[in-house]
Length: 470
Ligand code: TXE
Image 1 (cartoon, rainbow, N blue to C red):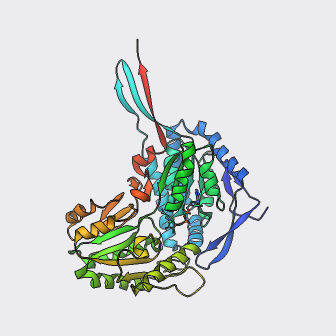
Image 2 (cartoon, protein in one colour):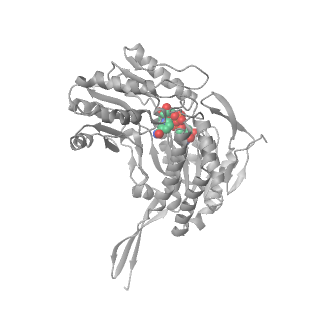
Image 3 (cartoon, rainbow, N blue to C red):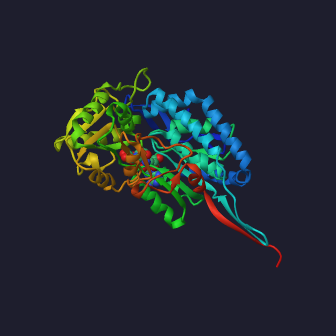
């Protein structure tokens, strides 16, 4: 057995594996730890452990609620360990990692505040009730951008609804989730939350496992379609969150002094690696240069570096393939005539560092505008009238979020309501909030996360119809 200090959690116990794989620190490009590479037999054990834990876990809502609250407290107590692992494996600055751990705990608390409703349709000579019952084993498959928040958004509602879970983080960022599994062992009964890691095809094997009743997945559109196809033969339930190409639209009256900072971070939060980050910005032609300059000033002033160092505001891209993709999209835009008002190039050194980049002089039809760049790059595109900007914002297969910016919030809200996406913001471009539904239209997803709708997506609806008397 290879030496491992990041065990998997199966049935509440350490599980080590014969094989391991290297986890890279994106700030150095070098392997800094080994993670367990789960075998098919160990995957069976994990799913079986979840199935075995289900009958006891499904019946006591109060116990589940208390366990989630205790889990939130345990996460806060273990924050520093989780924060360090997050920064080392994902690259984000320590302050952002701390924020992520805090939001993870908050997600558990917010979920614990929800209730699975019990609806009585009639109660006289007949009683008709609508119940929402748990499904069984839920597979939670997460990406590498905000691994702990993604995990919590999935396992918290799944558990509260009475299901048990096998969590599989991205092979790029497995360590923080593995640590979470260890940290939560004393507050969750064995088998209720199992955490495994491994190189793909582990994700596909988990998604297709016959004991899994629901797959909740966040990742790319291409993989999401595979998950949907692989769920079909068994009619497994699925929730998919598949990224976006969020448009921001500035209206002509926007107060740039007041909004520039928020606009900038709406795109560059987490080094641009957030599904709900602004990925393209449409600006009235008359204000184009002013807006580009304001954003470029901010891009140049950002402290980029190793997230472990004090004062760093933005880390590297999280993975080598993502780093390569961002370089490719920016090179393609520059070769096609776009100008980098700031950045436009990788930074020196071994890590996956890319200079915060504002691109101007480009239109729809350029790859960095049409595709999800998922990196520290914002294309700024001029428009002539608002109708045209809305049409361009909507002219994509994606539909996760969008935002409209104006000195008149109600005017902006009227435009925002016409964006074809799951969330439309006015004068902000933010993160999904625990109690608020989060969903993607079109290719950005299937189903709803968060809030009551998210909780109910981990249940099957059942009618209990009792005829009293004859
Ligand atoms: O995603 P994948 P990747 C976007 C972003 C990025 C692209 C690729 O544009 O450039 O996706 O990122 C597991 N069945 N987003 O390659 O492959 C895999 O192990 C089941 C958007 O990391 O989709 C990992 O745990 N699971 C995004 C997870 O799926 C499978 C966040 C995601 O991997 C599987 C991150 C399969 N067949 C990237 N194949 C967002 N929506 O926020 C792989 N996996």
